[in-house]
Image (tube, rainbow, N blue to C red; front, side):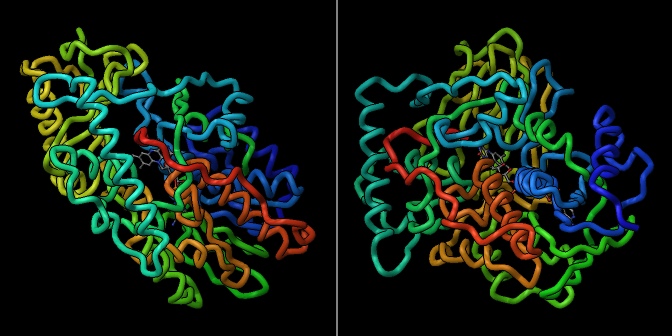
Amino acid sequence: MAMTRRELLSASAAIAVAPALGRRAWGAPLPREADIVVIGAGVAGIAAARRILAANRRVIVVEAAGQIGGRCLTDTATFDVPFDRGARWMHNPDTNPMIRLARSAGLDLSAAPLAQKIRIGRRNARAGETEEFLAALVRANRAIDDASRGKADMSCASVLPKDLGDWAGTVEFVLGASAFGKDLGDISAMDKSRAQDRNPAIGCRQGLGVLIARLGEQVPLALSTPASQITWSGRDVAVETPAGKIAARAAIVTVSSNVLAAGNIKFKPEIPKRQIDAATKLSLGSYDRIALQLPGNPLGLARDDVIIEQSNSTRTALLSANIGGSSLCVIDVAGSFGHALSGQGEKAMVAFAVEWLTRLFGSDISAAVKKSSATRWNASPLTLGAMSVAEPGGQPSRKILTEPIGNMFLAGEATHETLWGTVDGAWESGERAAEAALRRIGALGEPATAPSRAPKRRRGARATVN
Ligand SMILES: Cc1cc2nc3c(=O)[nH]c(=O)nc-3n(C[C@H](O)[C@H](O)[C@H](O)COP(=O)(O)OP(=O)(O)OC[C@H]3O[C@@H](n4cnc5c(N)ncnc54)[C@H](O)[C@@H]3O)c2cc1C
């Protein structure tokens, strides 16, 4: 059965008021045909679908989860303020399309704190110590940038200056695990150096997950509808789901690089090894948030304070305190340590957060914890991790993932050359894949020039805030 664009739009409008029931709660069967099927209703999927709708073509998004957003997921129920379980910040306000979209969706935006504070044991770092740290950060960044211009790619860790002294561990945490979810030994110097600067950061009071859900309101989509198999060729595609099969002229697949490499969706014929290898080289790092409600400000910190510690091991974290003036404090753990900790489960994660805060702030805060919640992105079968980072030698894989596979196009943060691991990178990748798919089905002319973006700025000393 063909479903017209009007039917699709009126169906999606009818269910927009009841998103919790799932987008097929309107009772309409899954369309049997579309011009383009989009797999995944994360940022890239929603961007792709909106672009296809704007070109007046029929699109249906199939999403395995019960909600829109993917790695942009806001928990509005557990605490008295929204808790962004995934992405929290939008970067580069001059060029980031999400910020304009958030404003036009009527959401409230505010800038992230400009600086992080550093604890050294139970005291704050003095001004001179903070300057030493920033100087170490600049030297480390410069060494990685210099190495990335060499012929052979290397790991970031292997090219760090050897004399970072007491700041070596903190520099490693801030540039590696805390920024990208992997330790510097696992990150390609080329990939890191090509990453566009990610400052300053802008947050959305209602939550980034709420923003993506708003942006998806007019998009025809089926929630709780995983794509199980995609049959593809250079002419058309067929997407199988438990609710039925959709025949389309093209498909856009936005699942994470780990989900793609895990083979959770079957492809007929198999997709080329070249693309699977590329996804494997862009595996996701580990980044999780441990949220504690701490009424009465037992840490004695200001609204939105961000704290890191001088640490000589990977067993460390980043604290965002008193978020938005509330009693919500979020402890981020990442990289190899975060991966091992999240593998032990939520109870162990909360225990670590309490012990870490107690070590840094003196008083035992376990009695002050009123509520807690922790994310475990590695264990989520629909993402299997946090954000893609190229292993040494893996940077060219990003371009490989943008190559069409018959009438199938990959999108998602991992496919963006410079904005990988971000929401705006995912958004741009969705729009780019939609344009490629529309062109393939004859709905768009050839582009005059490739879509452009502000040139990459050099990184300053300030750390990325995730
Ligand atoms: C803890 C954390 C913190 C982060 N912080 C930031 C930040 O502050 N700023 C920033 O810019 N970025 C941040 N990121 C990264 C950002 O969230 C991602 O880059 C972005 O959301 C990725 O979007 P995507 O559409 O590419 O992928 P996804 O969000 O993974 O979307 C893919 C979708 O596909 C669905 N799916 C999977 N399998 C199937 C299937 N078989 N059938 C149908 N659907 C399927 C998934 O459920 C998902 O909805 C963070 C990520 C995490 C995890």
